[in-house]
Image (cartoon, one colour):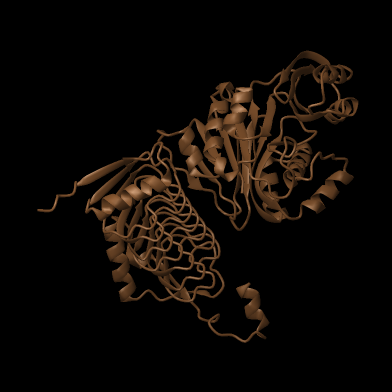
Length: 237
Length: 300
């Protein structure tokens, strides 16, 4: 009979090299441990990167930069704040940040979900290629820049140049938008949008009415244009 | 890439372990800047001036030569050698530029690192722990402090090119900076034409002079910081400290990191959360990223 894996493994990050912590996570995950708890993460960078097993990792504190990068299938819960590039290039799975996130939250995600309960910094969901980034608070400057697919939901305010040069995808904002970026335009909130928002808001217990969100999409003017259209160059650059 | 960090206790009646906090934050940021480390520490204000100077290793008697150079211009109440130079308490009534330039002219091995009623700048090549071992930074209690770990990119790795930069010759003003100010040459020329003197080729020293020049003309710190966001080209996040406060500004593209956390008691700023958590591991604070183009200040 196969040995039964422990239900939970704790790793105390204090004094351990990051490489050792990440090896420990991957080892426990590959052995079938369903939940791994990281103690004393203390804002350390690169925690939980390249996690490919369906495991839940809980960080009891703040994470530094690139937490959960390249995630594929697992769940990461940061019971604190995160630095730059949280959940960068996630393929599938879920990252949950109970506090604030830094610049580039959910950058280039291809699938899965990032939920930031607090605020996210500049360039949230930059170059998003799929999945959803849901922010309970506000997002900073140039969020959704060059977004290609997926959704960015902002329950607070959005900084300047929101959705600049977005190719596709959808941005929803409940609060104020400082300004829209080049070729980002207002769009009609449709039934599918309302249903998507209602599901996301209920899941995260956010008390917002889906119909109060503003929808922003690509104006598609930058998809194709003549290089002699100087006015468009000006807005694009 | 460099690391910057600031701490200010809001209550003007209170001092806190700003030296220890700086050492812990800067050591946590060591990877952002392994070349050199420095702090500007603010203690209780003195009637006279506190001077910190670097002495080049130049044989025996350099401390006594430094003392003689300073005594020619000011009353030396106390002068003690430090690992890299001298620290002195002075009585002096004249222009600070004349004092700083005068002692440097009289003693060629001496470079003034800071002058102020409450500020002392301590900086050396090496890590925060190295600096603490040499200068006992962590024993210093005061109202506020800023600090820096440097990864040199465009100018030399030595004590003079380390941060913080004293905003020479203005008392008690210092700056730490992470980034590149690309219109530095224009600012340098403009300030030099107005009589400013710079010791290094470092853009951050020019930035310190640029800010202090406006503050000395009576302009409000918040306005100066906000204007700097529009007038400076490049990518930057910097902290400036005065006799009673600290402020920050971040470039309009948000290219250099800066976080802040504020409680009723203190404000802490750092390039990365790892620094804030090193100094405040158990505090219920939620550091947030400073916005692109944001500028703000606090006074004790």
